[in-house]
Amino acid sequence: MGVIRNYEDAVRELYYWQHNRQSGDDFNSLIFHLIQKAQSTPENMAKLRAGFSNEIEALNAWNKAGNYGDDLFVKHGLIKKKEEGV
Image: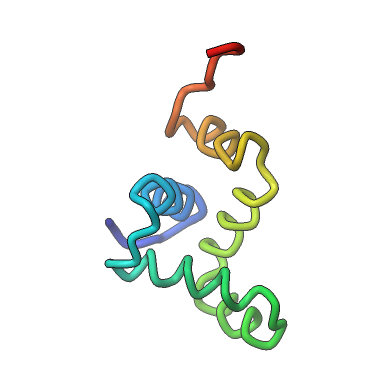
């Protein structure tokens, strides 16, 4: 996908990554994989945060969002809210 310039771009890239089976075949996918692996190590997260703060913020918001993270994508207009019972 494209260059991440802000938080909104990071959410869009995260959506693309999540809905394309986390393929890992582009730079942004590699970054999201790297962030997930580094979350248990504060020193590594500090290093990543220096260059990829928007991506970390988006991934943290997705991890906290309801409906397996889809609430974040609904909030940003990337998917429509699922109807109850559907």
